[in-house]
Length: 139
Image (spheres, rainbow, N blue to C red):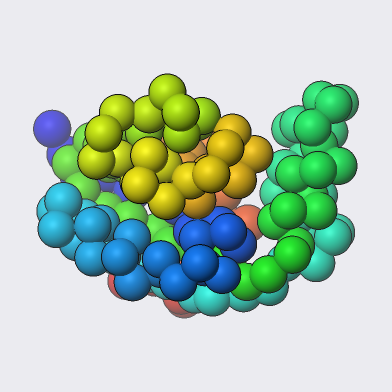
């Protein structure tokens, strides 16, 4: 296996609930290196552009509204097999179905307010990383 990068977001619910530090600690405790990190407050246009792949889905409007309700923390994470490792650490999209000890089980409220986001494939990670970070912003 080789080092891989993935993109991660700590969503507004987890930030407002004061769980940012706990989630970052879990990331580092699980062997990830944080190559870049920033806290931002997304505009409607930014959230809509980021989630454009879901534009035709019925939950799109709610998702954009949620992602703009407060600050988020965006990160580039590195580790061997980072995409799978981050998705495993996050847990199932629905916190009710997530395994014990996963971030979504610990900090998510429901399928719509589930604390974290992570890329699901290499091409998605590349798009999502480039959406939020310039080459000068990660090392």
